[in-house]
Length: 81
Image 1 (spheres, helix red, strand yellow):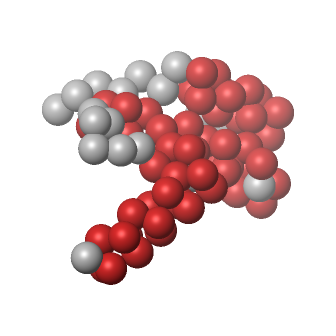
Image 2 (cartoon, one colour):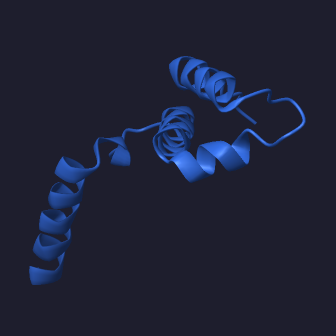
């Protein structure tokens, strides 16, 4: 019983820290949407990752890549498999 309580306390602590953690009612699509948004936010807020991402063939500058990622965060377009 103490293991279950410890896991529940740990889960609630992590849930407060990371809102995108979900729960037992979270669908696969909701979870994937949250993962995409978190990944885009990490790239946008990390200058080195943003610069690396902007070196790709479709990117023109860091500014345009930042805007593209922000638009992707707003509408992640997750397609169920």
